Length: 253
Ligand code: SF4
Image (cartoon, helix red, strand yellow):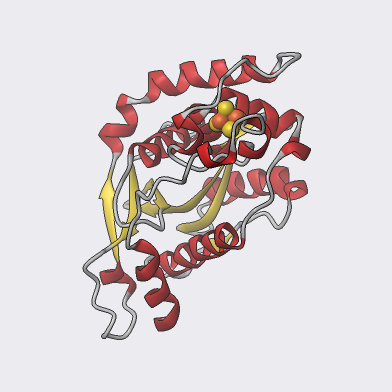
């Protein structure tokens, strides 16, 4: 198995900016340091993912502990699917055409596999649909029997005065039609990103509003260094109020 070229997160990075994709792969030392707030956000994302696993108890966790385990976990995922030794896989790992994904939950229901991706957000965004569409592209090319694809996200009206109940905390929504409608874009964008990674120099993309949309790019310090600091972009506040919500979640877990 060849080493992967793109993962779900690097694919989305490339959708936001091909220069960011290139620098991340070829010049990672130029990345800005993660702020304490960003580190906290990653930890919260993992916590929400672990809570969502309780919706599908009794599964096998195939999360790779390090990148050196990717190949092993791809083979283990294929083996569990082949033998049906478990009906639920957490962090099911797939690779197709040098594209690697770790799917949060892969669940067998009435003899067919369904994909679930967990988002630590209170709503579905276009970026989440593209993320899901990329995963669908990989899985469906390996596993044509994939029956459905759901996003799981947080119910903003959840009542925290009650004991934690994952069934009420999360909303499951099928996005199968939306991800199918994006398959042609995924195919074309994968080709664009692979071509970009073959370039000798980073693509000539000027900094602009896309540097924080949908995520603050971690090359802002590099690309914006000749622009006065008071003109640097500020992160989008698309999830306003959500951090308060997660603080409550941490207190109640
Ligand atoms: S800072 Fe902006 S232009 Fe530079 S890599 Fe990031 S998104 Fe692209």
